[in-house]
Image 1 (cartoon, helix red, strand yellow):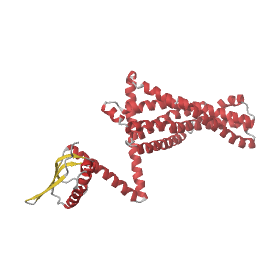
Image 2: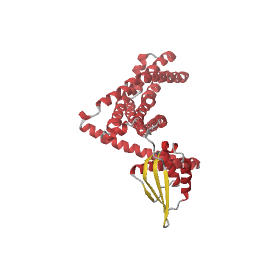
Image 3: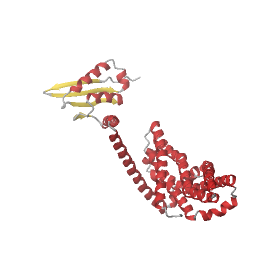
Image 4: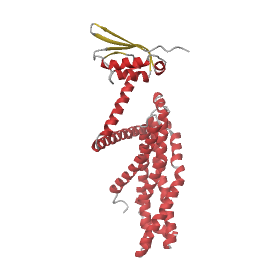
Length: 376
């Protein structure tokens, strides 16, 4: 077994010049096997009082790892000396330590400040993420133009796979939730309408509520929780396993191969899921109306086109397209921001789901304001 070169410190003072030269291996293994490790630490501690014009040299350091660099960084009082001789690899190690210390200091300072400072930091973070989202939307526009210009080179396989995973596999849960919501809404409405002798208006209430609002929002929330989290986790795992870095090295665009196929798949699948959810919710509502009010299925279906103008159906399907694109962009945004560790993966997935649902509700409110005169 090769013997590790012993770490050593050589200090010289000549004609008022103060120089420190480090030698040997400054690694955890070399320091652990050095009998004079305690003396080295004492020397480094004493060097914290070295004059500012002192000259440091690491040219004779054969190996340097994070542990050894930490000891040297402490002797420098957390700041690179003005006169220091180091190579590029050693500089990268010290830069990494400096960045870690700066991030930890900032986090500690923010946590100690008052709520106003924390609120300001949160707003700045939100604005930063919004700017990144706008950039991602612009890149998506260029990727879509590239796809339309040469569709034969597009990621059709990825689009097809995501349509299957996002759309077909979500039919079961959306059908169950839609059917149950229709039953609940119909039962609650029937009790009130019966007391006023207006039982037939349950067709208006159920049709308008489901087709215009509940269907698109329910489908979007379910897809955000089911598929949005899966998209974020997939991209996050690619970050942890360094697949994203490999794609960048190979010249493969993240936007064209990762973001655009998911956006297109959700934009195609969501209107179909909205229509499916509407159908199952109306079926559940008709079942409850038949049991509670004695309204037959045929009467319900005959009255539905007159009670709910067709413009509401197109508005609901349009909401589905918009919600699908917003969910995909949000999920991809948080997936690309995940750091290469498991803790960040869990936090990013949770933030993705919460943000997607919030964005869907905000978008639905904007739709309600903009199209308040449509289909009423």
